[in-house]
Amino acid sequence: MTKERITLGKRGEDLAVLYLKEQGIDVKIQNYRQKTGEIDIIAQDGDCLVFVEVKTRKNLAFGLPFEAVTRKKQAQLTRVAMDYISRNKISQQAIRFDVISVLMIHGRKPQIEHLTNCFEAVPW
Image (cartoon, rainbow, N blue to C red; front, side, top):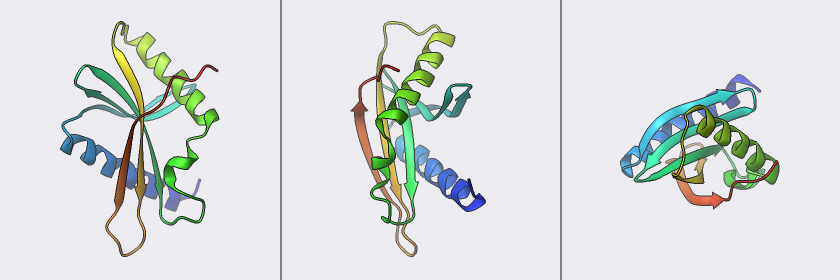
């Protein structure tokens, strides 16, 4: 991954964190990493534990950012989320998977789209 893509992704994640906080969602962890993968943001929205994938693009050449969350990516996010739940001994709590799409076209204000409960936990 190029330095430019890493910088773009980090900026998108930072904007997503600010957005979530503005919505009253408590951001617990940014960039939760394990051997099985990474979740960009783990947050608490009321009684619901939320696992958030952030996709950032600078143009639409490859489609909308959220379209990059494929079934394979959903399965990987599910594995990491289940790892987090297990390690933290979380039970009897609602969970959901959200995607935040950040489009940062040069010279324009970033566009943020928040898709809540975007997919169900995917078996792997």
